[in-house]
View 1: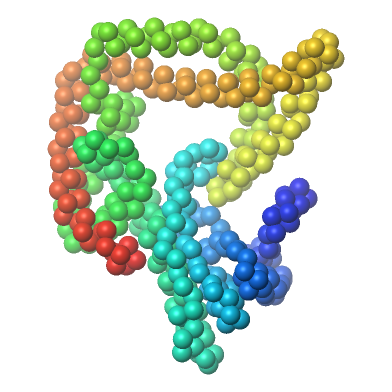
View 2 (view 1 turned 45 degrees about the vertical axis):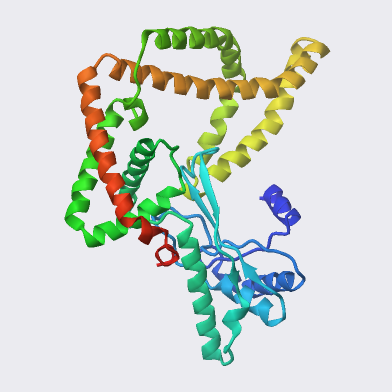
Length: 375
């Protein structure tokens, strides 16, 4: 794509040819490696994605050796190379604007890996050792599971634990739950299966009423409910006309990126949505301005030019606000007048949170030690 290529060149991006994409062009990668090494020798910084792609597997893919070869080559030429591992964990990577956890790991000094490296065999061993070190550091700052089915379990565990501790749900703690799950499963498989079954049962029951552990703990008082109704009714009445206007004007361009991304691989859907949305916006905004100018007057055109962006943002905000409001209403009618169901869920949640707290205390020291993070 010419536009993307122009942007990448402007960012000084270096091309990488993968075997599954361009097997006949693989030899050109040596030029890319040389350019990257030269950049490091010149004192510049480079960003590498050692897995070669975003992935949908539950754990870190096997790293390629390119990062280690680049770093070692530059270090041999006297560059003080340090590798800074950065982990990206997306909540829903195919959804544009979904949450993501970015964590920076411990810097890796490359020079010590060169000590004693000389012959070809030693060179290969040095590359292997540095690649393994990079992999271990990245694993320490990302969520790694044996199977995706365990993700709802650790998320529910974190929500229950955070609620009991009076803390906010922390994406960073998911790494500890993931590593703890592996240890727990290895050392106490029967107890693990019991906990897994209980957490999944609790998760399914909450899903049926579209509630969360925090929702179960809510208490409804007449004054609070009345204030909620008055406040949100006012917001809906005042904002609904603008929202409906936004739906009319932006309904079509809002759907285009979603339709365009359907045929894309999961790994690139978020990127496709962003790029298509950007292209559509650059066409739709001037188009609306021209249409209002032609159908009305120059004043209408200027109004559209200035008013379209804030109206689009308001439409998106109102849509998201409505989703939250609808969730609160659903939970109220599901739990507000069903005290027995609520009491059962509260009791089960309390029992599970106590068990999770015991497990956290039992494994905390081992999970927070550096060796556990890199093991």
